[in-house]
Picture 1 (cartoon, rainbow over the protein chains, first blue to last red):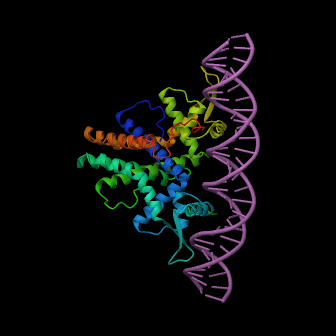
Picture 2: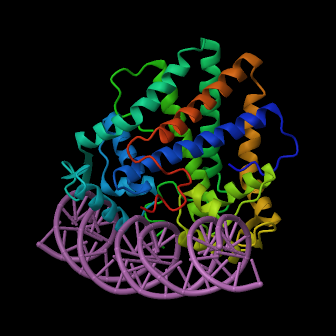
Picture 3: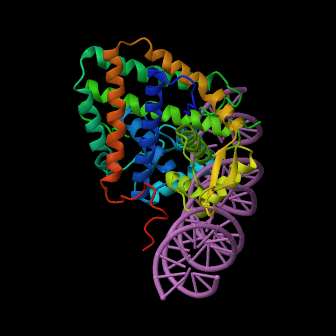
Length: 172
Length: 172
DNA sequence: GCGAATATCTTGCTGAGCGAGATAATAAGG
DNA sequence: CCTTATTATCTCGCTCAGCAAGATATTCGC
C-alpha cells in the first residue's frame, strides 16, 4: 500500500492503513519462520503454495511452482534443490507425463508450519468467533473485495502487466 | 500464514484463509510496483517505511531504517545508495547529531506511490463506506487483533526471537 | 520413427545482503 | 582542553538467490 500523507484521514482510510500494517506484520512473521529454519522468504512462499496445492488435492509440478512464484526455470530448480536438501520436499516423477517433476511437501514440513503458524491462526479464528453473522459478512466481503481489487489491478495491465504465470516471461 | 490442511474448515478458518490470500495478493501488487520501476521488494518496503515516518513527522536515519527492515549496516548503505541513485531519496546530515544521516523521500517518489497504490486504496475505502458502524468496528477490531497477535508472537521469543531492530543482532 | 514442442536441469553471470573493519562525530573523564 | 569509549555510517570481500542461454529427456503430431 503506502497511503502517502493523505489529506483527509477519514475513518475508512484508517482501516485501510490498518490492513497495510497487518500485511507488514504478517510478512515479518513469515520472515521469522524463514530465519528460524534457515530458509529464505521465497522458500516459505513455495512451501505455502505447495501446501495449498496439497490441500486442494492437485499436483504441483516444478514448472507450475515457478510460474506461481514468478521465477524462471533455473531459479525454480535451485529453489526445489534447496527445499529437497533441507528435507521439506521430495521430487516425484510425473505419473501421467514423465517429463514433469512433481514437488510434494514432506509431512515434517507441514508439521513445522502448523507449529509456527498454528497459534496465530487459532488466535485469529478466536477473534472471529466473537462476531455475529452480520459482522462476519462484512469482514469476509471487505477482504474478498480488496483481494479482487488487487488481483484485477494486476490483470488490467498497469504498464508492466504480465506477472501472473508468464511461463518464462514471453520467450520471444 | 499457511493453514496447512486444517481438519475442520469452519466458517472462521475460511476468513483466516481469505486474509492470507489478501496478504499474498497485496504482496504481488507491491512486486508489480517494484518491477515497474526497476526496484526490488526491499526498496519498496524501505520507501513505505520512509513515507510512514514522514507522515508521522519523525526523522528516519539510515541506521533506524536498517533496523526496521532487518538489514545490517552494509546492506542498508547499499539500499540507500540504490534509492538515492534512482532519485527516490536524498541523504541529509542529521541536524542535532551530525553522525547520523537522515533519508528523506523525494516528492517524486511519493507521487509514484500515490499513482500506483491510490486506486487500490480508494477502492478499499469505498468498500468500507457501505458498512454501518457495527460492521466497521468488527473489521477494525479483527485487523487490529491479528496485527497485535502477529507482533506479540515475534516479541515473546518463539526461539529465534530478536528481529525487531536488533541493532546488528546481539554482537556477542 | 522423425522432428517439433514441452519440462527440467546445467552453466556462467549479476547483484542483494552479510561479516569485519575503517572512518567520523559525539559523549564521558580527568 | 585532550584522551578514550561509544555511536553511526561507509568500504571491502564474500556468499548465494535468481536470470539468460543452452543442454538433455520425454511426449505428441504426422
